[in-house]
Image (cartoon, rainbow, N blue to C red; front, side, top):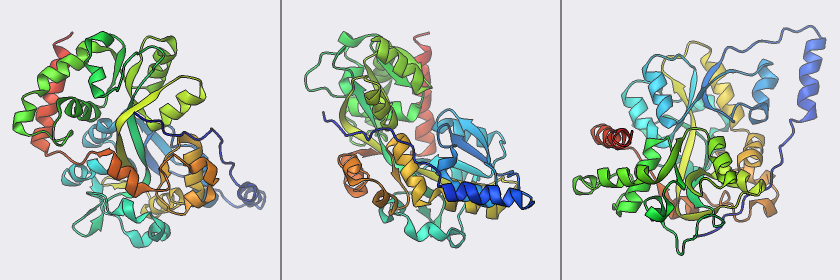
Length: 358
């Protein structure tokens, strides 16, 4: 186990010159455009400090529809939700591409593309058939964590999810893909998120044991944090941003290795109905180094623009890993795409295990 330093909370203010510029524009009688740009986005990434340059140009925020988890994004697009941009993770890109849900990016329309951290562009499925399908925006880790004040365990591993001593003291996320990775580590699968046929035969038993121990399945980390504070739950998968917030709020949590690493970003939806140039301007604004400072201040994550880390106090960066993406991705579990048929089988086994306990 290990401790990863979480930076203290501090929001980055939007530069005063930006606000003055917008006000001056209004005072001169110029029409400020109300943006119709629409995004399918994670809650928490909609704040203006992430895209001040976009607001300076268009005078308003885009329209946001929020997703519950990674699978929710795919399902909503498959059922016809019309948006211009969607926030996906790299391991979703092949599926989204193959189902015709996203379009390739014209990187010449993103001036800051050359500033993106090279290691992020080299991750699997970012580039397919010599075309880029996602603009890397944020990256980092999520983890299994436990509360040593309520859970007594030596040399903890992911097995704490199925240890009968901790029945009703665990909580599971609603993200099935994450639970598959946890099960894979418990089962000793060679590739935790992609089992062989022989390894898959052990999945139903592991899934059932995970559910047997779980107090609840959470969709909102607030639910988890409240149960953690009350002492009802002391073991869970936790977003990296949540471990940071919990620490700031005095909720003790210790990380269990290995961490799960990931990279997510923005993709062009195949059914976008509004200005493509405006969509590219939004992507470029999100790649502004100032956006990276705001991202770190709010969540502690690494940013797509390699220059953003230079704007953060080095003392705050130490121990977070955002200055060394190569090491972070090498040390953690990075889940790639699953073959569709195997994914469907594993998801079905997970839901059957869940239904068997109802």
